[in-house]
Image (cartoon, rainbow, N blue to C red; front, side, top):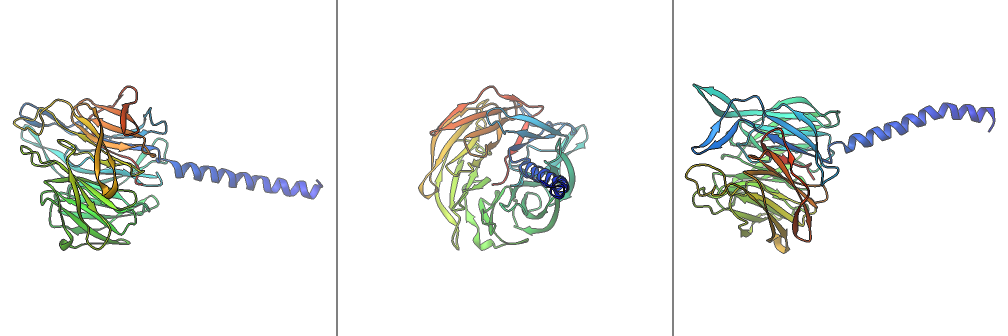
Length: 396
């Protein structure tokens, strides 16, 4: 190579290195958080013989847990953010690109004489998962008592079901900028919500009305048509959708003393979504999730705690139920496994072959391996620095 060629190479080499480094950094940033789950810890609420006990605030947190080795999750961040058990365990989620975590806080505790009471909050925390360690970068005001939250597959929109607000908050996501851009009245307490994979519809649990509302989405324009409401079982409290968008499954917690808990399967496509099947997995399916591969669904059944005079809570530990998703969205129980006390949050690993369940009373995380419709607990439980009230994986 002549002098001119060497000179050109010397000039080009730094530029090529810079391009390569930028590519590596960009790739790393794009992957940040895609192998994480978020866990909300509530250290205010406990239960005794007389039922719920409200304690002083100040010790809640949100954990960022790395599941890149799915059998051995590791806590990579512990952020001191208010979180609550009082709401569906779906108040948080990671954007599909793994860059941001969104966490809605439903209630805060305020002093009431010598005790504490829960009052509605309106905060949405924005966490930068590309930072090392992850950090809070913004707090956004949304509707009153934000509960279930769903992020679109494109990652540019989030919808939040507001219980006290009887509304759905519309939230824009542009890069690291998160902004509330609207609020849609649904006339009833809204508990949980899910956005369809094509981003054109959302389904919201109107839990006290025993119905599922249908929202139409056109960009950031979200509308609700009451005539599209779908009758559900008693108290729809959680909801998810199959990856192909064909079926919505609403998890209903029933009437406390009469049970009637059920999973309601809804045909989600076509001009008039409607119920096509109903089944019951057991008592207290507050937590519920569908696998990213669409083959299974799972629910941690509450079964028991020490709440007084409630046959909804009749044992001291819970149970995990695994269900296959068959033709027509039909759910069939294939396996059950014992859980700890008051299991709430649940999440799947990215390829759907591991399940994570948080036990509120036991302050730990159980990990299960899924194979051939069976559940096998994968190693010892991960101890957590508080009571896990909610849990979500990235939007898929």
